[in-house]
Length: 579
Ligand SMILES: *[C@@H]1O[C@H](CO)[C@@H](O)[C@H](O)[C@H]1NC(C)=O
Image 1 (spheres, rainbow, N blue to C red):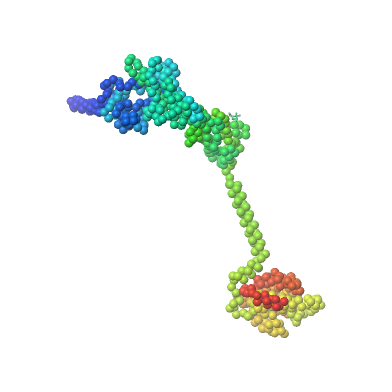
Image 2: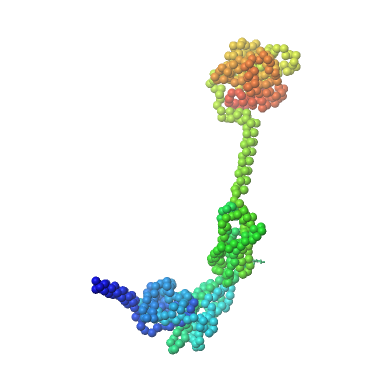
């Protein structure tokens, strides 16, 4: 039992030791045992980087070209070697994998190995504190504006060395370790190890690395430091600009609902960018500055210009907020700007409402005018309609006359002579025998039945009259006191009976030719008919020349059967002839 356990333990141990062995031996660069090829001094809290400086990694132009084949190792103080992984203290650039401390810390001091193919280089790196410097350590980042001339970049570590006789400084630009002067940069000169830029270009942006040699105990050390150069437009001379909301904006809000207020501001370029953005609300009695909103700034296309946002949230809009002014305040080194926003309660769009109201009023007016017109001109409209669209209803109905005319003729009068003047006496006759046919027959092509003219001038029998009425489509009664009191009322009675009996009803047209009183003796049917049937009142003057053109005739035609009128010269001629 114990034996087995021991065996197991030994087996596990051997597995572990085998693994450790393989890890170390697998990546054993062949330069690990020799003295460092290069010794570097760098400074804590500075960004520094190292290229694997093997000869074979440079192609003909001296440009490093070893990205895929470079490997970095850390040799610990006990001699163990550990492969370094990208991302942690290593950084892949366009063409190389760099040992990259950002920033360097004391723990980075140590021995590093790098290999490209079979070449192996050993680097000793010593991180020291800037506090040990005699003169202050120079700027590790500088901001130049394009309007400036003669800007200087000096090696920041230069004043830090106790050693007097330092070598010339070698300058590289950016992380590809290109010479600062390549590509050709005419207004850049290096005088006394200091870079002088006669003119500033956007392209001068970058990381500048300076190296110089010092000897400590007869060993050569390279002191390496970097300076980051930023280039911007000259400082703005304008206060910031609020892009939105514009001054006087009224936002719609709902009481009790949350509301976001966002201010958008553009800041001009500034070497010392220190924007102030605030939302303030001014209530009638007090002011309040909103905190908690977080401003977000980002570079926009133009170099050095920035756009910032500040959003605050009103958790619940109150009635107080509706009367408040909300101010967005922005300030830079030059000045300040403010825009004021107010809230209004959400309501139906007034403009929209106005449109609807106007539309409704307009529609109502049109309807009113329309119905008024229809009311006024209904008869004309119907007549027009009949003239152009309706069918002729007289065709094929077996009737001979369009209208039977009943009027108080001379023979039918009782004892009215005394009440009337001579001309009045013949009015009905003139109307019935002259004007009526003139208009209806000659002008509108109707065929009338006037007993005295068309049947028997002397009068007719009762039965005959009933028959004749039945042969007519309409019966026109020219009512007056004389008519009502004459035996002619019998014709009216007959027509009423006929219209009640018949299916294809005869229709009665009552013309109130002269005012009359209904006498007691009138038959009941006649009385009823007089009170219910529509009556057209004659208001014209028989002697007037315009008596043919009265509106009265339109009403009569309206009650007459639908018959196509031929608007032709022939009819006009016939009218002319009759006149
Ligand atoms: C904003 O600028 C005006 C001058 O334009 C100045 O009078 C005012 O004091 C400034 N406001 C703040 C808060 O600095």
